[in-house]
Amino acid sequence: MLLKVAFLLVAFGAIVGAIGMLVSPNPVHSALFLVWTLFCVAAVYLLLGAEFLAVVQIIVYAGAIMVLFLFIIMLLNLRRDEFGPDPMPNQWTWGLIFTALLAIALVSVAGAVVGLRFSGNPLTLTSIPDLARLLFTKYLLAFEIASLILLIAMVGVVVLAKRPKEGA
Amino acid sequence: MEAGVPLNWVLALSAILFSLGALGVLIKRNIIVMFMSIELMLNAANIALVAFSRAHGNLDGQIIVFFTMTLAAAEVAIGLAIIVALFRIRRTVDVDRATLLKW
Image 1 (cartoon, chains in turn red, cyan):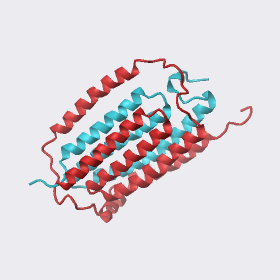
Image 2 (cartoon, rainbow over the protein chains, first blue to last red):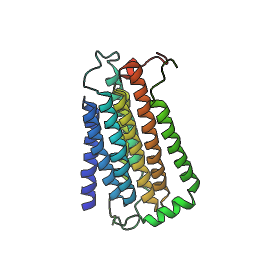
Image 3 (cartoon, helix red, strand yellow):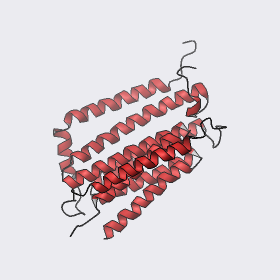
Image 4 (cartoon, each protein chain N blue to C red):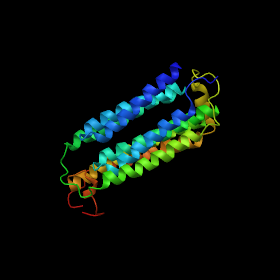
């Protein structure tokens, strides 16, 4: 019962943060709302017993990725309402209609999943040694490829963000 | 006697967050906020993966979430570099004005 109440609170917080991200006109406020939502998602991971992922979520998403977003927003010196008239004024209507249909479909699929139940004690946490053993045996190749992808991304960012040479 | 949070609730949260992310991609004009919405959709999918991993009692879903986070970090770095390059050329982050491949 206590877990259900905690989950409802955290889910409400996540949804409020996501809506706040969409409606706030200032991109800095959007980023801060998204940080709040990501913290709530980390709390959902904790409630599901995935405490390693919760910690990684806070460090990588709320820490590194959102700091990068805020850094870029401040680097580009964005202000609100600098866009002028909207060339596509209908996109709110159609976006809302399409997304409402998508949400109805997805939530009804979620409601239809009744065959699966959580097994075991809900407060049991994932054992990190088991996770690490799986990561370095069954998924070793994927792990190495992930490190390669990070290296490629780093080189790519340097190439993309470099100021082009004069006359080049 | 069922303990803990029902799987349906977690999946419903995942579905709602994914829909909100899709809404953000559809209606926002600021490319950075659209990019944040994509991050929100990735997180919604991650919630569903962790929930199913928990329901089935194996850890493979959590490993996939770990790789998704790694790829999200790489994706954000590349995407923000592209946004900086776009901004350098056009002096705007309005996607509705970035309609040509060149200039």
